[in-house]
Length: 569
Image (cartoon, rainbow, N blue to C red; front, side, top):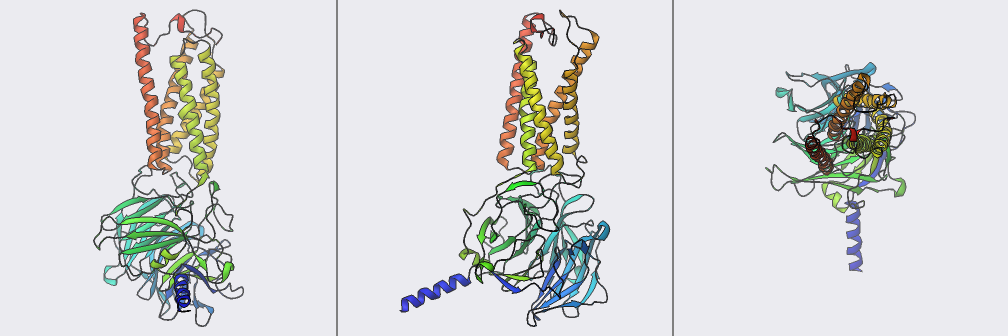
């Protein structure tokens, strides 16, 4: 009997240590803030109240402040003497019994970079000074405050263009100012996270900031929208580190650090929800065509483990875990987008992003993750987007078939008329693939399709490709013998010049597209190795052709009678 009791107690301890969802407040259909998303959230421990500000719902952007009293179990609207302008998608957090917000988008596409403070005790808002180096106004930035620390993080975001810089704001009164921790990077630099917005992000330690996904396309740049790349920033060495891809692509997910466990050198943050492909009301359109969608109980867990307090290169790992329900199978929240997290002693509070104003608690701490069930092998990122189809079609078109068509026309003219038929087949089929790739590329970028390098070069190459097909169909036929008409010579020069120019630009642009798409390192290696093979073959065959023509007394670049195509071609 004693053994059974011990076993039962062990099972109870194990269950209580798992990550668990608990519904704290059901949807209030008559009173309260109602269904909304992208709001700021903060918990006041002394009064057991959850505060929220702003957000958007059904086309309306809010600037109201509410709190939910967990003891009285009701919502109350706060009426401060002043308040921030209406906005959504803010960087926010809690420190010293106060909630802080920054950035966001208001009505009529007005963007902000100000910092506001809400006092939980006086229930009043006040605006803080900006300092000498404030960030650009933006929305869709991500950030937060690590529990117990006085730094408000804010990174990336969007206004007229997308941003890739990272800031912190010191909330101590004598230090109120912004510090630019990272100045940003080009969207073609694979070593750093590209410009984006509406990503998930949170400080995972006092000095480390983890980020996942977001929308990289539009705003004078290109890239996946949503994305599945993940990055870690160290405030100590000012460096970004790319992490493994572990989940489906996401926009508008929520992230927050878990309360600490026994090991004070092990930190964890969780990610939940976000736009993958599910049609949810009041969401943006996504470019994902197919995705292995996350199960409803999936929690993304990021672990950072230091060997000592001064460790500059901690070990990191993403995992997919299950969060259990405390009330059976119905005790799991619906999948949501644009919800908000706030870390508390018992776990993480969640509000918004669904169809009501319900409040949930993800109960657990850093140690609870160890007892939570792994999903699969712990990591999985399987999906097809318009970016993938764009890249595949452009590779088959400009990277394979059109290259082969030029190769045949350049080096196999002695196989007349076989070379011409192969050339025509390769060019026609390659052009069809490139048209499909062009359409997918345009559809994958939310806005400003041709206001960045890859898009502009792609448009030029696409137009040249169409003109090449047209002037090939309308070509003047060759005359018998070596002497050709001036019109034919001009046509041959233009056809060769524009064809080769487009081909070279296409290879450059495919390479740029690799950088924009944030592909894994292995894909870079395969592409540049493949491109190197083609370059080697062209150089080798040109040398061979030159030697052959010079040996036969033929001036290089001028065809002999034996190398002419059929006179009717």
